[in-house]
Amino acid sequence: MKKKICVLLVAVLVLALAAAAVVPPATAKKTLASPSFGAYQHVFIIGVDGAGQFLRDVDTPNFDRIFKDGAVSYAVRTEVPSDSGPNWASILTGVSYFKHLIHNGSSGEVQRTSDTKHPSIFGVARAALPKAELASFVNWNNVNFGMVETDLGVTEKTVAPDADLCDAICAYFDAGNAPAIFFVQFDEVDAAGHANGSASEEYADAIRTADGYVGRIYDTLDRNGLLEDSLFLVTADHGHKVTGGHGRFSLNESLTTIAAAGKTVQPGGTLDKVTRDRDIAAITLFALGIDRPQTMSARVPANLFADTPGEARSFYKDPLDGILSPIMWIVTQFWKG
Ligand SMILES: [Zn+2]
Image (cartoon, rainbow, N blue to C red):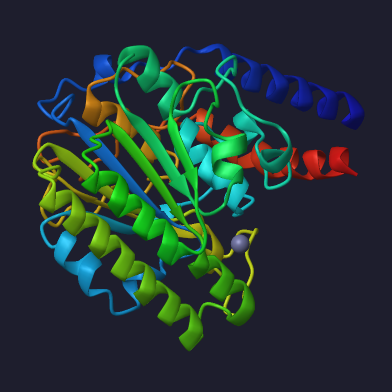
């Protein structure tokens, strides 16, 4: 009898999950009629690998001045595993790790092209804006190799160390480029976190240095008249344990930052508590006035745009992601051998 009940429970669970999987999600346009939809010409996403929620704890004068009238949350959830591959891929595709299955290993081995089921924001933007300049400047080449589709005509640069990457970015804007989407990944805060942990002076120093890069990029955009119709975002893919390293559930590892500045951003906004790093994808497309694909589970958070109520996070999709992402991570590690 007990066995029958177990079988019945499993069957109910499977049916519930299957039912959840076939319910079509609402599109951004349907749920959010807002003046902020399409209010921006450019979205700049500055990623600071490994900085997590710790931009809050370090003296960061550039971050503070840029987001003085902006919206900032330090309680944004990363994917689990709280690693770079899964999270930069979720930030760029707007789906969970369970959906895109991109990890640190695969992103260095499998080049991504536009025939993918889960396009990046570059892929979605390219379909809507065939002639727009799009660019991705990174230190960690896996982003450009294994996450950004290589056949979209995105301007891709991989430059290290971070100081040279910052120089390359500023030179790109000083040359007159005005991309609709510009993505950056700085890498050296992560290296300091691995070597010394999140409570170390070295880690704080690396965050201060990255803050200097953020300030330089912002001032370069300003000098080139690129800030007026722009949404400027800073984020990170994961944090670090006090002892260094990341990948699991602890808050030091799995809480991160989204900061936004722009003409319709709610001053002092804090983003709602269920914001995930993947929501960057929805925010970016929304700001540019591009409908996102039905398959994306990213959405526009409340308390980000002053004129936008924000969308509820789907109650059935995220528990599903939450359970299945770690399982799929274990399985993919197993597959890798
Ligand atoms: Zn790392």
